[in-house]
Image (cartoon, rainbow, N blue to C red):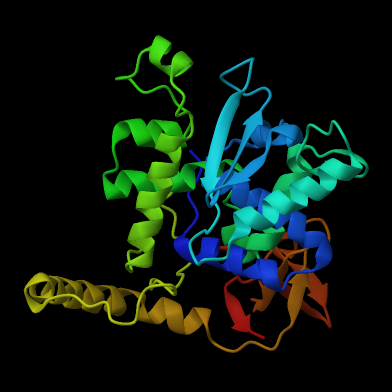
Length: 317
């Protein structure tokens, strides 16, 4: 399963539109389209530029072929975004400019003068995330994370199933095929779902990030809502029980992790070991004299190994 993005990362992606390099602007607005319109990568890439319209604070369009429909499907997204970035209007005008120069274009992202493939685009996406998250954390996210983010948030808010299905472009159980075929409000339930999410965010709500499969530890990101109003507060009745529980839990966790954190954040000037294949730098430790030679590398007459390996237990450099 794809891991949904934290609210902090979504807001930073929207804010980056005003200060990013010219070559990064187009991928950023395309990623935001996939996120807010709930589009898979393959669905977004098959976008009919001629179908895109900007109307009433929303951007709407048509993907000419999707994973679930050979004839395509409509999609819609509110333009304002989580921090009033108005990313949707920027994307729409960008599409209009491209449409004037490239009539008949039917794909969203380009790489080396041809429609971009998944590998190239996921590398762009992770490079953007690496500006706000660690490289290891960014590598856990895929393009499918963009689609599932709003679905995860809608589930936490208890939004109506029909609206959630419209946001994820799934078939609602309570809606028959004939209703889906003939109704004229194709994107309205999707826009209503986004409206509920954005309204909650504007009031200070911060969505939770579910645990990854395998319960791996994720990077700690700011848990506040930077777009929340300044006067938001919780009543004493609502927080009395939470304060007692959180204080007990935090004390226990602090006692368990204090040793690990002090070792993890201790200043280290080197030396470092470079993996020429992956490009990763590893903290080096001096191995014991009786350590097997295959456990490390010889440098200045001493054997050195990676601090992250079980065998690397020796003298700190």
